[in-house]
Amino acid sequence: MNDDAAAGPGAEEPALCSRKGCRAPARWALVWNNPKVHTPDRRKTWLACDEHRDYLAGFLDVRGFLRETVPFDEFEG
Image 1 (cartoon, rainbow, N blue to C red):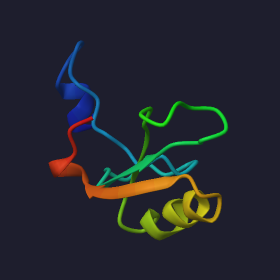
Image 2: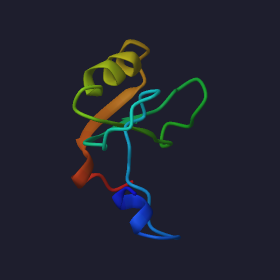
Image 3: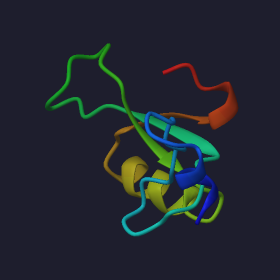
C-alpha cells in the first residue's frame, strides 16, 4: 500500500509534472498563453518537475507562448 492510498477517500492528489508519462512531483509552474486562441489576460499552466522544466519551457517558448516560470511553492494559480 502506498502513502496516497493510506490517506483515504477525498485526500488531495499531489501536483504532478505535466510531461506525458511523468509521475514526479511538480516543482515549477509554467505560465503560458496562446495569443491566437486566448485573450491577453488569460493564463494557462503546466506543471514541471526539475527534469522536465527545460523541455516543457522550451516547447512553449519556441511557439511564443511562455509568459513566466515560477517555483511551484510560490505559484498562486
